Length: 314
Image (cartoon, rainbow, N blue to C red; front, side):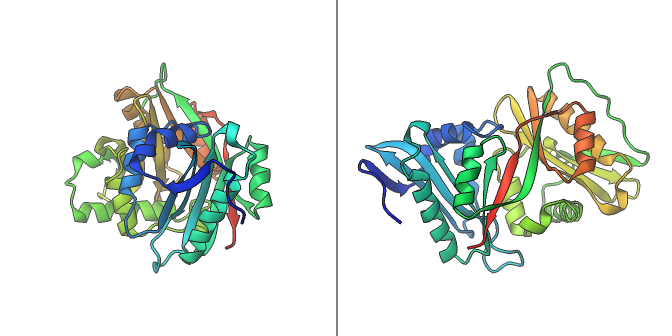
């Protein structure tokens, strides 16, 4: 792989680069990311998992960012999947910077024993799709983005018979309850379209990602409880900035689906987002997840640009 043009150099990412990288991300991401939230997310990434984050400078100014990030810890029960990403300032595109970052990132992932590589491209960016295809990536999944404008939105919370909705704030934050929340989440997630690609997250990774994330709010973590006291559904949402909330996951265990629990969780989540002053709530679904897409549209979510998830065998 040839090097970069004159005036460009690659160096490791530092926290001081967070503002620049947030600007890079926000050129394409629908969910805005502040420098503080980005810095926190990077700092909280489990130290046991492999990650490489790089900056390309042009005469000292950051003009591109690239990473190779493991989704799981090596040696676990899940395939070792690496997320590969490169963002280049538009006026510096076409100079081989993105391709060079991909080469460095893929090489890092291979050295760490990657089972396969994943990248993503917005489904309205044909140039980005062609770029990934030339590098050997193929579409494996399509995520459908939706957004709900909370200003003026008002939906009643209708609970299915025998179901109540609590939040994490109603329970002690201890190891027993964390494990219980994890088990409910995994049971609800096991049938999600696309899970065969990503695998179910291990407990330690989930625990750190959830409870040490800057976006996590106890009141935004909702739990559906049936009359026997069993936890049967989960919805977790948190702010990405002062105006926007993102729903990270909503799911119901198999035995309780079709009762309206997921819809109630979505309504309760939107009500909570509105109560903290958020103006919008975002989420994504696999386009094969018809039931969840139907719920979102019924509640007033509007379609956004989606994402093509692209896979490459190492």
